[in-house]
Image (tube, rainbow, N blue to C red):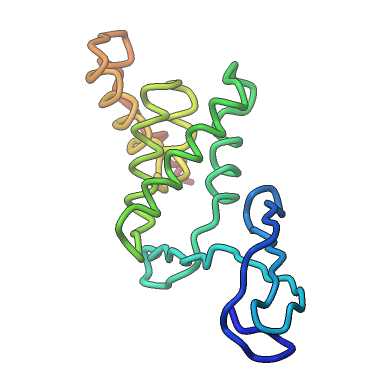
Length: 169
């Protein structure tokens, strides 16, 4: 570190302290040439991860969006908030693992898999928004698929949708 007083590049660290909740380090240094003391700061240079949306747009990864989607999906369900935080941390760790860009589809599929194992109602809520069902038939097909994978064969498996007839005048 170059001394701000004499430009010498040799110094010794006198004191180091963690700041910003462990996100940075403050170091007190002493120049070995002139004896002046000065402070330096070190912090991690964050690498921004980009999410590639369905339409090709790119935006910075935002864990708040994952939290918002999960909170809507689990509304009025008995799922502890600390479990949601662990899910968010797991997804974030996966996004930051070895790649600069991640398709939004991958994030959605990870969330769907986790929610399917965690709570079926939350899964269906999330899937209905994520998969953008255009009508009730798509929604019912997803329910049938989900119930078939779980080995359940309730009456819904045999349910056929009847679309209402339009009135003719």
